[in-house]
Image (cartoon, rainbow, N blue to C red; front, side):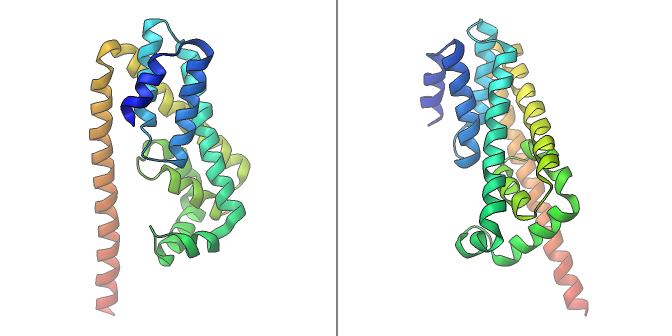
Length: 200
């Protein structure tokens, strides 16, 4: 799938290229396996070749990512907690309830860094909607997050040029570290609660 999108982007320039970059950034939110970040980095490389502009690539990917976030935010807000509790096979009921409480307390901070949390972006979007966060503030902080993250990726792809694949490799290592830390944090919380219950 990754090679398909890279080959497709490479064949385009100008407005069609921007549309494809934005579309990939949008669809990545709905279909996480899509290599949205890889395509974004490659967009920075294309900007270095002169086929796209840096500003245009940043705007296209930022708007795409933001639109994807807002769609899932809307889904969480409109469909509600019970819809996802009844149909989700990924999370147990108590996980959703905990996520809702977590967002009510730290929601805006999580939204602000959501693009830097691989594997959790879509969940964050949905949970933000379920938690009933203020739509305006949520939209603003998600836009900031999308802009900063995509700007960094485009800039990295632009600066390294033909070595853009090295940036993708760094992203993969970054993802592993972040996911490992998140997993360790979850295990720590679970162990702490189990110890507390045992003590009672």
